[in-house]
Length: 293
Image 1 (cartoon, rainbow, N blue to C red):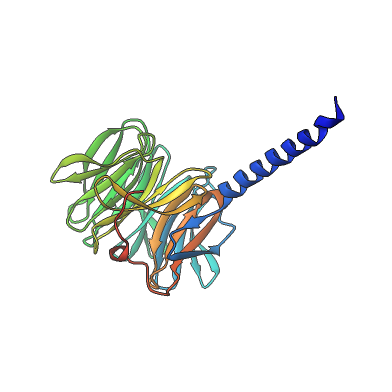
Image 2 (cartoon, one colour):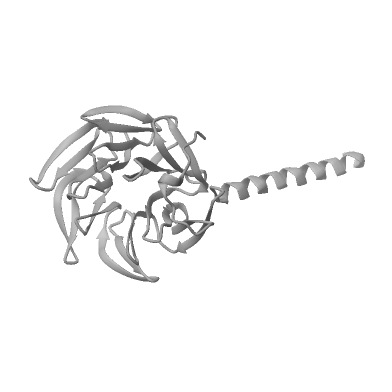
C-alpha cells in the first residue's frame, strides 16, 4: 500500500463511521411537532401496549406472551397490579367507568374489571384494538388472518360483525355518531365504516397500529408500529395526515390526560412518554392545522 493513499483511507473510514453514528442517532432520536416538547413519564414497563388515563391514574397493559402479562395501575408513580397471569394483554379502554381489556391470542373473552376482578363479556379470536362509546357499546378488531371488526351491544349483550376477512387488523376507534375507523397493519390502510359502508380513509401508511378518535374535532390519531422509525400521526380529513412525532420505537396506544397532555406507550423502549405544548396550553385536535406530510 502506498503511504500517500493512507490519509485518504483514514478520512474515508472516519466519514463512514460518523455517517453511521449520525444515522443511528437519528434513528433513536424523537422529533416532535414544533409546538410540542416531550418527556419520559414512566420506564421499566416491558412490552407496554394498552394505555388509559383517568384523573391522576394511568393504566397500562404489559403485552408479554408467557402468561405473565399484567394490567397495571400507576398513581403518582406507585404501581399496583390489577390483573396478572395474562397472555398478550393488548387493547385497553374504559366503558361505563370500568376497565375493559383484550388478549391477542386465539379465542379468549374480552374482559371487564368489576370490583377488582375480571369478568368475560364476549368471545373474540386474536382480539387487539378496542374502543367504547358513552352508552357502553364495545368495538373490537381481531389481528389474525380472516379477522373481524366486532360490535358488542351493551343493552342486549349481542355481538355483531361490522367487517370480515381482515389480514392484520390492529387499531380501532369509534365516534359517538357511530362512525368507526380501523386499520390493517400490513396493507398500510385505515378504513372508515359509516352507515354500514366501508371505505378507505388513509392509505400508504407504514404499519398503522393504534387509533384514537377525537369527537370534538372529528379527527383521528394514529401510531405507526415500526421499531425505529415509528410515527404519531393526526388526520381530520380523508387522505390527509400530519406528522406529529417521529423516531418512535414501536409506538402503541395514546391517550390525552386531564391536563391536556398526550401520553404514548412506546413499546420498543418499555416506557410511557408524554407530549406537552410549549406554551402550556392543552393539546387539542381542534388547534392542529390540517395538513399533508
